[in-house]
Image (cartoon, rainbow, N blue to C red; front, side, top):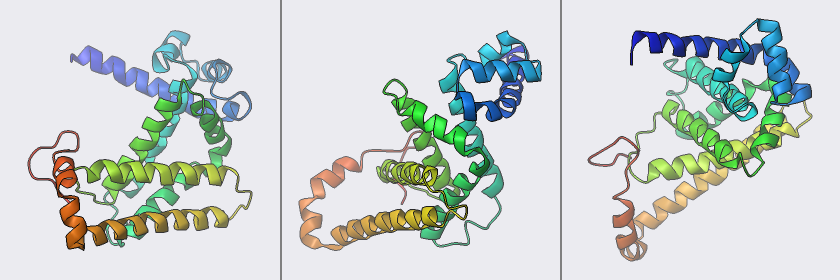
Length: 232
């Protein structure tokens, strides 16, 4: 990649960030739409052609950019702080999920509009991928070292926990969010119970023997970009 190409990508990224910031007040009324983008273009002075490069697929790219910007903000806030690593694993996950939701507390309508957009069949795969990316960032922040099939199961389960908690939060009218955080605690409890069942199965000689072949097949699965002996 040449320096010119890098400069162009940086230019587009900067425009994307400016447009998102200007767009958010309009998204509450007009959704992740061309109307919201047009308003942001008018307010920022970003060239329409550059705005098109920043969001080539329109609304879905706008919503995804907002979601990923908040993921990146979560990492920036928590990575290297030491506050997460000092907690037990259950509390790490709960803290990260809660913090991620708190980061969009002032943009509830933008999140609601995004949830509506990603509920459409044509955009559902993009929404699921975004949830997976959030779960991956949270597990990474929590110090996950899995490289075998557990890498996938952990992220799949947490994706469900995160997405269901966000939907509950969208309907929670209590400004303290107490009901949402109680809901999150219950979902995390479900995950912990699942892990306990897995551990019990591994420790049961009969179950271990019965699952020897399936476990051997699963043991061949590796996380993306990893090789060699799987981690825990």
